[in-house]
Image 1: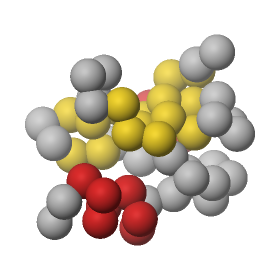
Image 2: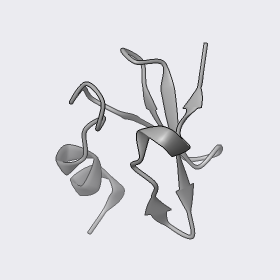
Image 3: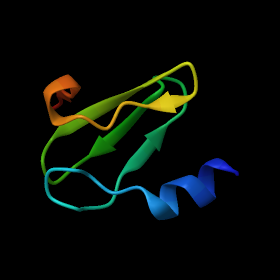
Image 4: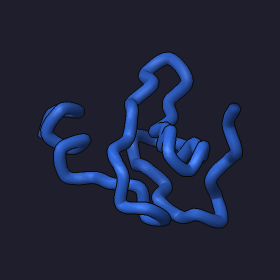
Length: 55
């Protein structure tokens, strides 16, 4: 499955909004909630408790 296909399926677990993939940072960003979900070993960690706040 490509990153594009995966992004089409994944949404922010908090608001169900779209996510932006930042390949260099290995994070998925929700601009609505201002949260960044880490990608560890090619697996997105989609837990609100594990997300970092972004500006």
